[in-house]
Length: 304
Image (cartoon, rainbow, N blue to C red):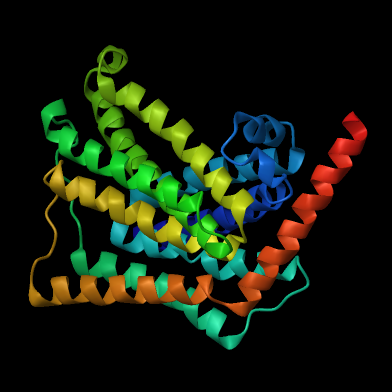
C-alpha cells in the first residue's frame, strides 16, 4: 500500500509540475528579449496571473512530492515525477499549433528513461546532511563556476541553445537548493531555533531566489522543450552528487550500478541534444521570438 500511495502522489506531483512549467514558460516567453537577465522580468512576471498560477501549481507539486517521499524511496519517486515531461512538452508545443514528430517523442522518452535508469542503478541511500562548511566549499565553488560559465554561454548563443544554457545554470543552482533544503530540514528537526543561526538556511534562501530567476530566464529564452528536460534531469543529478560527495550517501558501485548510471547519462544527453536540434522546437523558438517582438512594440506604444 505504501508503494501505491507513493506512486500515485509522485504521478500527481508530475502532473502539477507539468502544469507549472507550461504556465510559467507561457508567461515568460511573452516578455521582450530586452528584459532578459534583468529584475524587470521578474517584476512583470509577478504581476502576471498565469505565471502566479504556475507558481501555485509548483507549490502543490512539492506537497505531493513530500507525500510520495514519505511513503516511498527516491528511486521510485523521482522517475515518476520526471514523467511530467511526457505531458509538459507536448502541451507546450500544441499551444503553438505544432506537433511533435517521432524523433521528438523519442528524445523526450530518452530523457525520462535515462534519468530513471541512472537513479535506479545508482540506488542512492540517505546520509548525514549536516556537515561542516569546509566540506561544502569545493562544491560551492564548482557550482558557482559552472553557473557563471552557463550564463556566459547563454548570452552568446542563439536559438534553443540559449534556453538550454540558462536551464543548466538554473538546474545546478536548484540542485544545490535541494541539498541545502535537506540540511536545513535536518537542523530544524533536531534543534528548531538553531535553524536561524546556521548558514545553510540563508544559503537555501539565496539559492532558491537565484535558481528561480535563472529558470525564468530559461523559459523566456526559448521553448519548454529546450529547458525543462535539462532542468528535470540536471537538478536531481546535482542533488544526488552533493548527497554522495558531502552527505556521504552511499550509492551502488557494482558493474550494474556504474554501467546503468553511465547508460542513463548517455540517454539523457542524447535526448537533450535531439530536442535542441529538433526542427519543431526551432520553429517554436521563432514563433516565441515573434511574439516577444510584438509585446515589446505594444508596450512601447502604450508608454510612448
